[in-house]
Image (tube, rainbow, N blue to C red; front, side, top):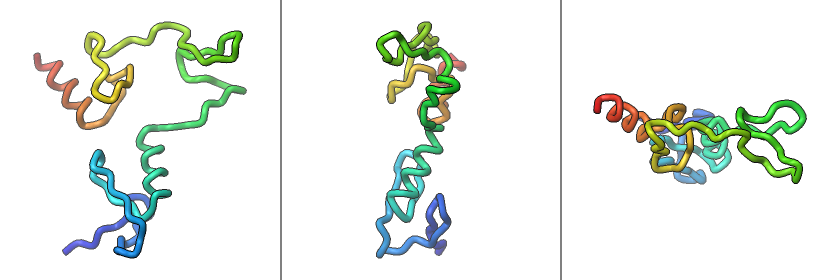
Length: 106
């Protein structure tokens, strides 16, 4: 039998640990910290740097509120997937990849 290891730090998983499991990406983690680190990396989550460069298409209005400078394109005729992200074409989750493949074969 193969020993399960944390997907982040490669520690051998033991029942005494606070083990986390992600059914979305089918991975185990030795702690909530490792799970959180993996989720943030998977989602390419970064702090917004107001002093340098905002994400594409986003500006800060006069009231200090973040707004979209222009309407963002919706992939595949407006379909945004089940997890409500606006740019399906960039998502690498299995569901969105399958939906893009199905749409291209239609």
